[in-house]
Image (tube, rainbow, N blue to C red; front, top):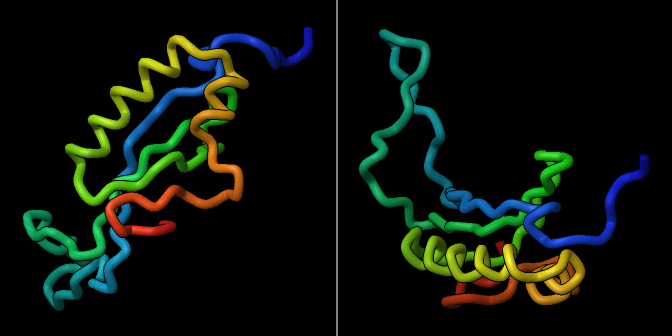
Length: 114
């Protein structure tokens, strides 16, 4: 039996929010008494971006960035709205509505492409 190509969007994709740190701060902090230590997680990175992605259910490694936000609250609010569309739209309707035509993310809150 071949791969399904027509159906509801939620049969093909799931949505997730991914936090991306685009700052130049070090990922690891060197100390002589241990091999490495992560920097404190309580500081807010100036280059922190929250990206909403559609992940293919057949291949978890394939994710399409849909939008980018400056805060997690905005990203999760947008995810809830688009999750409703995901459950109500067909695959082609969802792709036409949410997937960027040019391969880049839409510009939101002055963040530009991420």
